[in-house]
Length: 274
Image 1: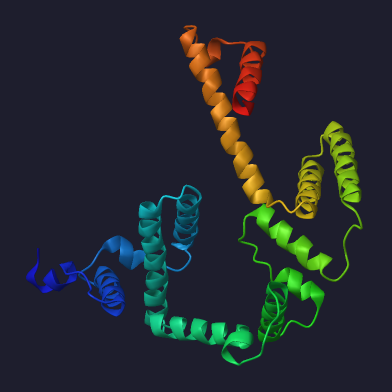
Image 2: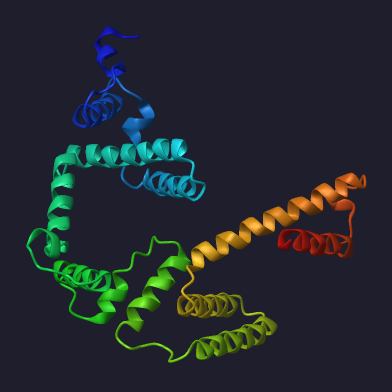
């Protein structure tokens, strides 16, 4: 251990000390004496890291793995401080200004708490939150509200949010059966375009079909991202059953016919439903 860095091996006794310790460690890593990789990074180069860490934290929440959640939240904090360090070097902002800006935002968006303006329900609180957000962003049209839904969101979540905001001004089906009919319509159009072999049009029609399915999910109060992840996990479990069963019979999956695998798939479905 280098003597001048010994202090960084001591845990912070307070929250402030712990955060300052992490901030200082990143400063060392990004200094001329630090790590070449850390020095080379930019906001864009570590963008994917921020997304990955957020998803890993979400996965820990889903699994109720709180030890892992503590670690993953630390990784997210690292990303925040790293971006703050980059921005500070560029004379744009720093960790202090990030925290103060967020504090100011929370005060503005909770007038029912901090300004003694009573709110009778959760819905009213959310309505005030959205109104403050629109005022902050200077949004003057509903189209701008839709455009403000981040492109970087997972596609299912983004489409869900866009549909929800459009529905708030009355642009919505009257009944879920209309949304189901839209799925049938888009499926027919996709089949028709598929037969034409036009790659660009096929991609567009696949998107239309997915958008229609998300609309039904919204009507039914189902988060489409969670629903698809649930099905993906279910698929893995059933596929594992097929592979294990084939192994018991001394066969590799590559040696099995689709019909044989399909029979095992049906057995896996029955087993899951028991």
